[in-house]
Amino acid sequence: MLRIAVPNKGSLSEPASAMLHEAGYRQRKDRRELVLVDSANDVEFFFLRPRDIAVYVGSGRLDIGITGRDLLLDSGSRAEEIMQLGFAGSTFRYATRPGTAKDVSEFGGMTIATSFSGLVTKHLADNGVDAAVVHLDGAVETAIQLGVAEIIADVVETGTTLRNAGLEIIGEPILESEAVVIRRSGAPLDDPKVQQFLRRMQGVLVARRYVMMDYDIRVEHVERAVALTPGLESPTVSPLHHEGWVAVRSMVPSKDAQRIMDELYEMGARAILTTGIHACRL
Image 1 (cartoon, one colour):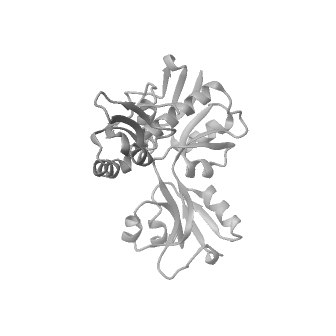
Image 2: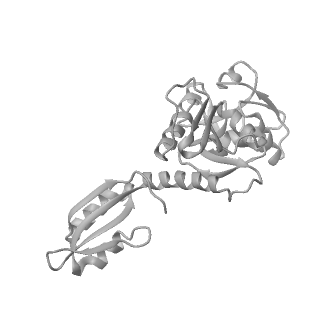
Image 3: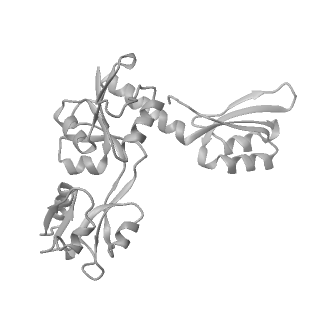
């Protein structure tokens, strides 16, 4: 039975469970549930603190897990990223009062407050900077106001919270993070159960990015039309009962669907339909 760690709370929790549900797995109905056995899919889910997931997976106690790239790297555990999941995107950056410093090269002798001390310590070392790191749990914006540190390092989405605290973002991003699937470093990826899980998750990612488009078009315009809707390998083209017309079916990126429909209509296509894709295997 495949043992999978899932975030039990925070910004990763609901999107992770939603994606697993779309992939055909059972998910808990009660937030107090810590373990869920999905016997139909031969999987056991463990709902854990997002910060702890990399530790459990890295130790080999659990086979794979879903967590943030920032939490994985901060943990220092023997686990590695094996798939990007496309949600919970964030940027990890430094911030300080205006005029304190312009980038990490000027941090020498200063103190940096953060909830990601492992990540920041490594980043400073990689840049050859000798600075102190203070670990704080939760919001770190007040660390500068209270004199705990001159610099903070934190996850930044819009930057509004930092600006409201009188701080400015400085330097290049430390890390671009998102939700990822992780596995113990060096563990074989050819395990059939792991491969099946990854295929299902990849199927959800593709289904979210594409729609199925159907349209009718005259034969003389087919080549131009299928150049616009090439699909993943090749579109399906079928003759219609009405001579001189064919039906075309193809997967197209959902973000481009409206533009493609407009262009097809101008080309003479009619009965243009798009439908959602719930699951796929490529």
